[in-house]
Image (cartoon, rainbow, N blue to C red):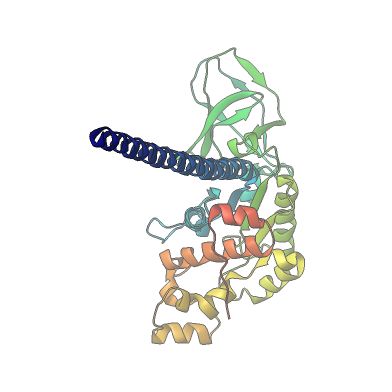
Length: 350
């Protein structure tokens, strides 16, 4: 009898333990399921946020402007050991920047390459095959126009009468040639047919462009500041954008011209000479030499920032890029979302 009672008690105990164990296991499973569900909920929220940010970033990317830098040797980056201000601007901003600089180019010639000053051809026979043909160009005043450096960015591939081709220049004969890209029919080109450079053909249709004009330092001494301003304004009008920056003169005796530009362009004017004199050495972390101190006293850009007497060095071009970017931000050409997307930190000066 006692054995039966003990057996029943054991069964009850075992049953109870089984129930407890099952309950514990079930409770653990429920907790695990709850944790998994919570983790999935958190993961979904994070993925949704990432998807939303990616979607927002794609929309912001579509709104980013391009930057077109038109100029002469100071835009090409002569003396910079491979550093140019347009390239540096692209690196520190993340924007797409085009360098339309040509060494020793005048304001008028720069505007012609851009399209603000139309250039026309005299009559000639376009050959059917891809052989160079001599051509003569002239401007709106019927003055001869010779593009001595057609290999510069923004010129080729160009177009005459709907025929695409490339321009070349023979310095010995001082003549220009046009070579069509594809063979076709022989054609007589009428006098007054306009030449379209690649910059003109690829002009930003959305007008979402920031135009940088850095010209005048290679203009002839008898070129008036009035005519330079007139040509620059034609460039702004042709670009069809209200986002532009005009960088000032950098040579000796530039004060009057820079004052005129400041009056004409207001906040859109960047007096880079003044900045380089006052802050250039400090920004470049260069200890002023005696010559630098003398230069600054004479209102000239410090020699430690100059190469070859008139052009900048690598430090000079980096500072120009930084100040152009700061001006872009100050003028509101980039909104807060674009600045955050690009990871740009706004520079400040005490």
